[in-house]
Length: 206
Image (tube, rainbow, N blue to C red; front, side, top):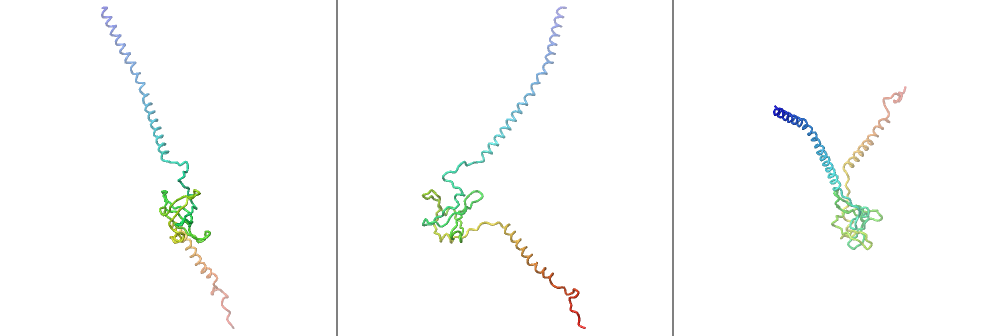
């Protein structure tokens, strides 16, 4: 009888311990939801790194020049440079620079001929036709293998003019001329006497 009681007590104790273990085990998964926070942090770190990379690429595509070196020229200072002929005499000066939208220099515009700015003409010289040098005062000069008369006979440089502006001026000029030509006829018709008005005919003699 005592043995049965002990066995029953032991079995009931085992059953109670197993039930307690089953009751306490569901509380452990509560720590699992903390994992998505780490993934969110990884995503935020990834987005920050992407932003920093994009910012670095944007800053890397822009180049700045902090200072001018001795081999670089400013267009504002280069304007007015003397142009020397074959005998090293001045035959003109640079008035402008022609370059493409990509920054490539196409020609130097040189003013030649005339006296005190009167009767001068502009010719365009390609960079391959000139040589750049410095004088004893460290000033740049352009030299060509022509004399003043030959340079003056070169074709005149024509600046580009938009067709939109020329057609607009022509249309305005044509309309104004048509209005002016039609105005005298209208004024003449208003000043002409009316033969049908009363009293215009002389009275008949008796």
